[in-house]
Image (cartoon, rainbow, N blue to C red; front, side, top):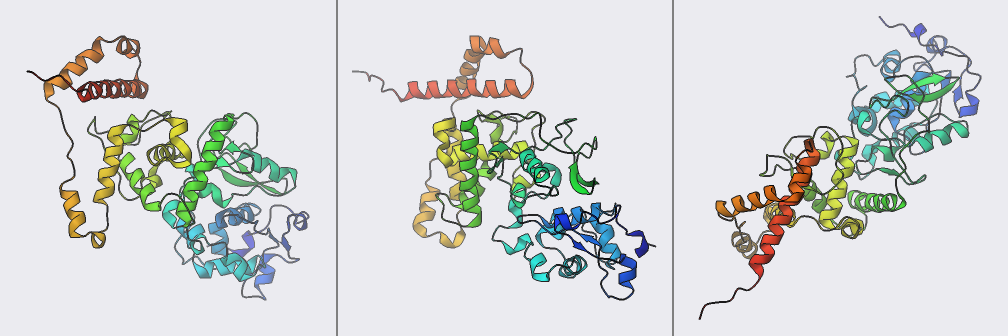
Length: 410
């Protein structure tokens, strides 16, 4: 059985005022004897733009426990556990449990409830539910230390499209700078401060060695993030959110070549590691790692020409544009269709396949080329991408020759 006397701060609350904390003079057990809701002697205030789970973890780490244990101490042991649930912790937490957090931290209930992400126009499908797949900005965390405040997790870091910190113009990072492990960062109380540490090597997260992206790359990703964010939030945007959804579904739908998703044939710097193999159902972003989400939005930008992506990345493959157009037509709402539009769909041009002998001849040309000999020793996904480019080039050149008018007989 869990006793209230076990919940005591690790250190005396000498630094509580410095962090804007609410400070009590009695232990929780003593206050609990006279109050219905016990009060915590150290209760850091939430920061603007902070996730609820981040604030709760900062509070709990000062007592050497988890937010779930705090809630057990508050008398919510009969509630379903919310420790690993983004929906129950950040998006739509239990109102009764959240009010208890506000009372024990001496916060106004409205102030705590305003942190719920469900109050924004962004739906839960456009957040990264798994903390291990979110990036963090090391410069932001170093800035927290420099001004004497706790580390804390920003809400925009949980947005699926966020790849770059707008303030410091640097790429977010989802791996430890010390041991390079991709693991769950967690909070630890170090010298009376809440610090993010690596779950693998227990090293406090801070700036240091990091990959420096070019200015053009950062500018493009910031423009792309702003365009996607405007579409998701329903603000005035040059692209509709439905178009972005259809583009993502198209990219992660299986192609006819080895069943790989279409995104595998893009001429992009794909992340290292195993290609996620699944057909798109709903929003595939919820299953993707941080690097694969970045590549996905870059491919979406190339398909829809967001943030002038085609000027920077070039045009997308023509077969993928046709696939996107077909998917757009098939995804039209039924109530929006008229007899005229149905007729258009029925008479849409079909994919024109060539005789097998022509494809065989093209394959022989590729195998006899110097380009193939140069990549034949390459292994893995790099060879697949290079081979895909050779195939596209062969098909484009053959299509160009077939479009040239041929002389007719007398």
